[in-house]
Image (cartoon, rainbow, N blue to C red; front, side, top):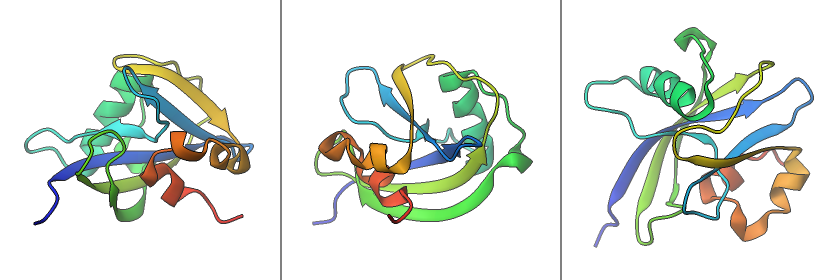
Length: 131
């Protein structure tokens, strides 16, 4: 039996110092990339632009999102589900703040993100640069 699929868009957001932005949604304990589910008819880029504004108050043009690829992992918060994510890279200098369903955000160096262990979502772990 095939696991149900959750399709999302996500942003691998970094700053000029190479730190990565991770978010934790309300009611969960795992940190992940900002993003979410596309609405009907939305392109992946358009969905991510919308999600970044809703979740972080971050306004970016679609052209600023550099495609990183399509990734498949287990879902972070939905047991027995598979996650399929279109991921884009984005470097930001402007401030961001948790909004909507985002409870917490952190800027971490990749080694500090790895130290989150099981609190790091599978996709976030997969996207970390190799040590």
